[in-house]
Image 1 (tube, rainbow, N blue to C red):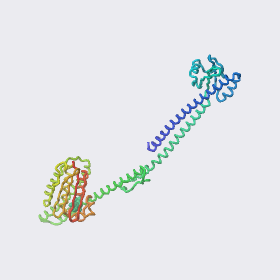
Image 2: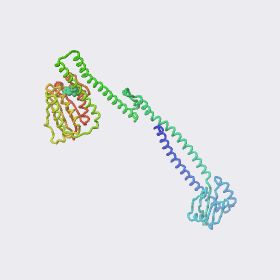
Image 3: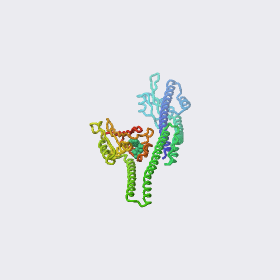
Image 4: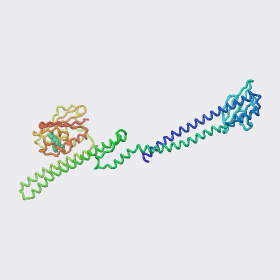
Length: 455
Ligand code: ADP
């Protein structure tokens, strides 16, 4: 069932129920009024007849019957019976045996003074009437409210017609209004079905910019922008990655081609092979970095272990010095807190090592004295690790780009590198719910600060 049909049906059911409740209530109330009114008029009829009969004894009873039948009963054929003290019929305007009465009923009238009851389709009123000679009469009047019932029947029929017409109208209007209200959604649907991976720049109409549907379209547009941005990043990442891989591969190829052109001495071959080895190392390093980055995407839900940051830094220092004996890596633990929990973070040791290896390697690589200074301190919530150098620095306008994949500053073009290291660093810090920032001054040096929440 479509939402449009659902809304129309639900709306119609609600209206039908409310209408039914009101119609039944109106019918019952009208029936109640009808009965009350008819009892009152029967009582008036009973008293009028008694008054004429008893107060005006000179009136001929036959004449009274004629008057009663022709005038008083003109609206409805009411039957009136008047009983004296000894339950004998003192007057009747119809044959007495066609009128319902019993000694018990007369006793009830005498004891209660006034009663209302029914007999078949007829309503019955019993009342007492006393004349001046202190004689009291029990008067019975009964009749069927044909006119009132007919009126009520007419009301019922009118209500039936009104009820079903109103429901039909409600269903029709429900369909129209539901269709109108849902039209923006079906428009959005049509627009969305035309958006593909190549047309992410398209945007949905946001209508009046106010209602829920406009908010939905706005949010969808925002999502499209995010998707578009990440598609663009992905594309540029792939093209940059292939470029970075192709350059050393092309170099290796041309070196081999040149080598093969002439006969070489063993020393020349050695030289060529060591250049090839160097290029090969570069390739391995780059593919490893790309692998770390790709793996870290899958590692969004990786298992975290408590890790002592100071220990990670020591092993980074060892490893870097082992790979590059010319580098100097100094670690300052002066501000380290007594509580070792403050330097313990939830993380993954290989990733944290890669993070600090990249920062320390950069610091040494981009400074003339090839020295990196590491500082570790902590506050109540975080552990702060800074890696500084006194090297070439980063131009101010390029600071915000250095964490982008494959970005390399202009002043670093003479240094070997691929521009992938810092983007890996940022990804690792993000995975550890931390922050990384950089301050730098050209030709004076750079300071990278990593903030990680401790246990
Ligand atoms: P790579 O060092 O391999 O080029 P990175 O991603 O590690 O790649 O760094 C990106 C760029 O940021 C570098 O190319 C360099 O321009 C700049 N950079 C990073 N660290 C430093 C530093 N300590 N001093 C100066 N520039 C730096």
